[in-house]
Image 1 (tube, rainbow, N blue to C red):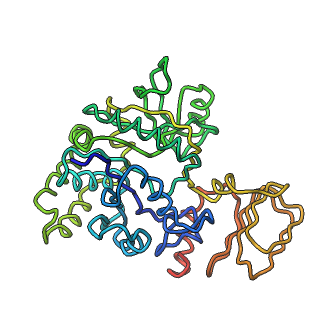
Image 2: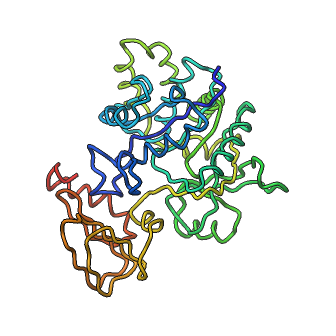
Image 3: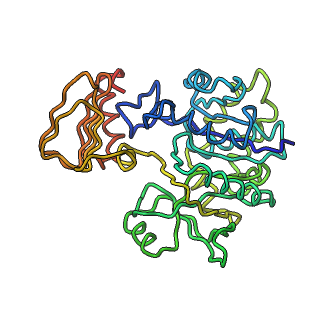
Length: 358
């Protein structure tokens, strides 16, 4: 058994809300969104190197991105990159990683994290993770990281936990509500009793596989068959078949909402899921009119906007409020800064104009 945890990095998404910078052939997790000289995937890897060696990392990604992962994380071996033949959301992604790791270390403890989160206070974060690792050693416990909400966000899961005299400890989850409507999210925020689910999880691989058997038996049945194929010539063919059979569903809907073994550790480490240009605007340095300007630009009567353009061009902007002006490669995008829910539509319609635009 490894003394250190395995780090499962989920890196298979398409990052459509960062279009046109994020493209099908190189989505946001492989880009330097924050201007730090490293991709979001590399930043995530570096964050966990403090508690895990390179051989303890597993990256789950879409089939076509394996070469990019190896290029960006040269310390990893090809067998540490698990490639999904189809995108089937996080339940399938996590099941694949769990069964794969269990095949060679059935006593493993896993930390599961998206590839595209920002953590501002990494020391505090590691301390919180260490607490979670300790708590996860109790058989059956599924630990998630909770973040105090600051707005009625409808894109996150909300966790209500049982009160305790010591909020620093692991808290039993009372309810887990994935992506509520705006009215419910507002109620949750006002109550003060709820935290966001960060999408980062800690659990023993055995606890997780038991939870799949109990709450998603169809997925468990498909992946139990993996024992006959992992490490053999039939592995790729089996995975293709397995992914055709499993549902497109998140781990939150599939297990976390149903299980009575979910616990939360409250985290205060400067977390952002970097889900959209709007979330990046919140983090970046702004001018006196609350604009983020990454361009050779002259602005008039413009506020609360994000201007990101090729520096070789001069851009003159007048009269915009709460807008995104973003040019990358062959696409110029001008839209409301907070219209991230429209991006799938933007991308779908751009694709009709030509594959080169997405």
